[in-house]
Amino acid sequence: MGRFQLICTGDSLMVTVQYNNSYKDDKNEADKSHKHADDIYGKLAEVVCKLKQVGYAPNTSVVLIDVDEDEKKDMVLLHSEKLALCYGLLRSNNGSPIHIIKNLWICEDCHNFMKLESKVFEREIVVRDRTRFHHYRDGLCSCKDYW
Image (cartoon, rainbow, N blue to C red; front, top):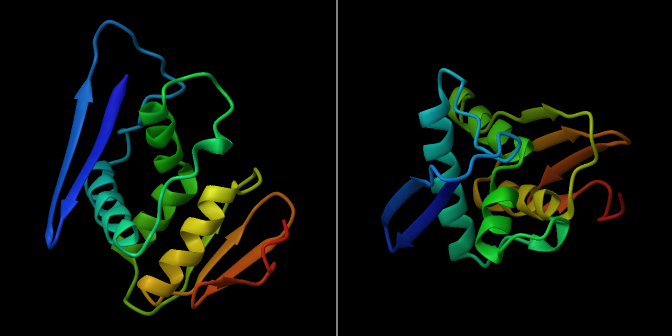
């Protein structure tokens, strides 16, 4: 299983991915098939580092399987909407809104991540999940935290 580790101190950032060959579960393995995967995961590490500096901590209560806490953090940090957000940050002009569509509900951690990201990076984000549109701007969501 890949281990996603983020170390940020001040202005520096280091990302490491470790692999354990003794066990592999493809459902939880980080998908690196996208041609911009390295850029996306690098941007994710940068975003997580900045958000941690203003108080973000992954909410692992949304992970319902019995694995250790570090693995739960990895799983939460690699949710598809976070990867889509980072792709949008890489590919869009500064200040332009980012639109993400997913076929499942957004989890509490991703919801809070998007709110905080919209404030820190000063970007409008629209996420369409299974039931509604979430418009994030200046650290607030249009659903008023009811979803």
